[in-house]
Image (cartoon, rainbow, N blue to C red; front, side):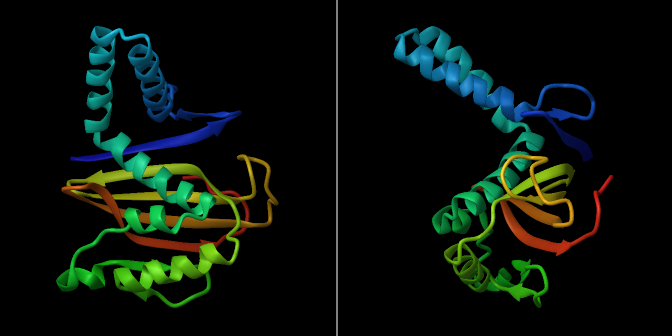
Length: 193
């Protein structure tokens, strides 16, 4: 079963192109509601909210979107530990299935090599990136995310001449969706999928 959805930014929130509220915003709201319910010792309400949260987390689309968001969060926060946890660990036999193509460089193959490349990038004061025009496709246990990477702070507050197009490929394992491939390169102008 293949599922494709587009996400676009409008103001400070993300909206699904279908017009619905971004599911990640809903999940965050539920997590905040859960904290409030636990603090108020309303455990019945907390259990109901927990069940809703679990339902959200089981949704494949949400899980892939969250994995992609965690990648960009690790980049923005310059967290090597977070970046390392995002990448798939196939063991030695499948090590060649982990590939990263940074802009203007040859492909880096192998999980350890990819993580080492991120260590160098994150240590050099990497710029802040925000994913925009996110498109997610899922086929079984493989998902690919295509997005525009906007440099700078908030969405829309960037130099229009600086833009990257990225493809992020994730595989689903026992520990959730993990990145197995990232490829980013410069583009001119805006991307419309």
